[in-house]
Length: 138
Image 1 (tube, rainbow, N blue to C red):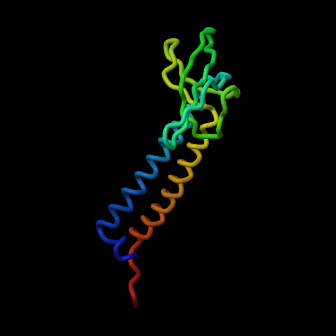
Image 2: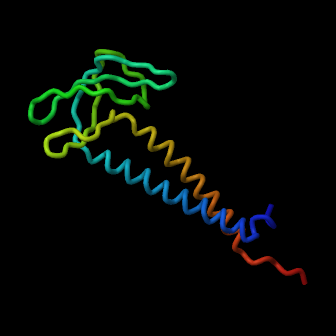
């Protein structure tokens, strides 16, 4: 394997995987930080919807101006039954909600972050193997 990694193609692929993993990790961390900066509100689950393997919940929450917002949000964390209270994070621009998510959906960012972190460390190790000079036998 070491010989194939030290080839021109191997070096290119290991560098490409490393760059992709680092870029992906940065994007996941940025998205997580951005979503944590959004405003939040208590919401009531109105309905739980299943479509194949995906589950979403219809929630109602109050905006700062007093109006009510009803949205269907993806449920990636724990299961929420109708009538339960949840926290919703939302991004307001010009008084309108442009994006929102359940606050307990942070598990997705943790899973993606760990997976991309492991991939980045593995790709870094492979890149080190690919670019270290071969030992000469004396």
